[in-house]
Image 1 (cartoon, rainbow, N blue to C red):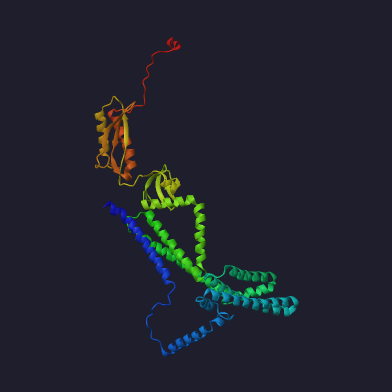
Image 2 (cartoon, rainbow, N blue to C red):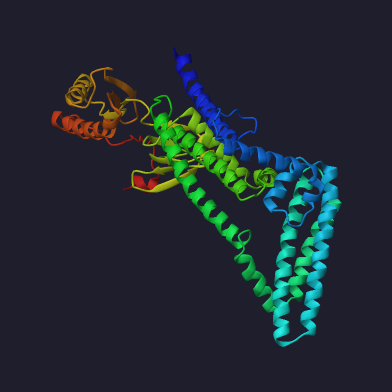
Length: 464
């Protein structure tokens, strides 16, 4: 039976983690819908059927001239990204060279227009400036498509040196143009970008959707945490520390998954971020060895449950009530209302005394009386006073014995059992009441005393 009780918490924890993994998989699996998903049959009107057939025919014709479409400067960026998916590394290599040539040709137009600005003045210069802004905007759209091709090529194992060369060309052109352009040209380009549906407007939409998604994600994560916490609280075999920790883990896993999905919606590749976190983890492991030690000790405390929140404990020589336990530290409030924070490594690595783990405790009292007093009377008074106290338990039986023949007194032990909450009340009451009962019965509690026998004194003391 004891073995079953020991295994049950572990089994529940494992089932909880499996449910969490299944929940995570369901979220990830439901995001991208497979093209092979079987859809229920739908009856469409003849006009819609004809429209679908016409679209399929048009797509087939376009597929026959894929080369020309992929290198067409007028192609939409999103369409280009879709068409890049099936291409091989070699095909992307050729396509990147074509887009490089297209951006270089458009950059030459920008250069020629800027030279024209330097050679003209007045209204003519203003008109040329507006023309330069238009050309630069068109060229920047080409650069966006060029970057999409390079990114797809890199993911499929393209030549790193050539990719770096293409990107260096892209960055250098933009920086040199920004350095050599006049303020009016830069202003016109910025205004044009903000008013473009694929530029600033698209960015603002993405930021708005990302903000809404993050706020919704935070609320959803809190809801999941509350549901998991409520479910775990119904499992009596788990401590409050462990349930709080598991609910927190679920909360942050949901946050991380949702954040990754939000980044993907913004078009960011989360793969490099994951790789960066993995590489940085080694550095943090060495830099925060003590913190990781506290983390491991916190896990051991939560799993083994030597104490829980609200217990009165003696940890590393500190006695008080456990206020809270985190993964790295334990907070204790002492009897004089001091707040003490102990690192979990110091807690788990030292002797742990849980003073309120059991429902009952034994009160250990020692009374010393004079050698001249009666042992029978002393035991009778101690037993009568102790049994008359309403908080003393009848079972187990209290113990009253002669404990020690000390130097100055005969020491008696008084060991009644009480409920844990009544420990100090009984301790203080019996100490006072038994002392008063001894005084009433004429039984004395002697002070420490010694007898000295002097065999001889110096002559100076003898004359006196």
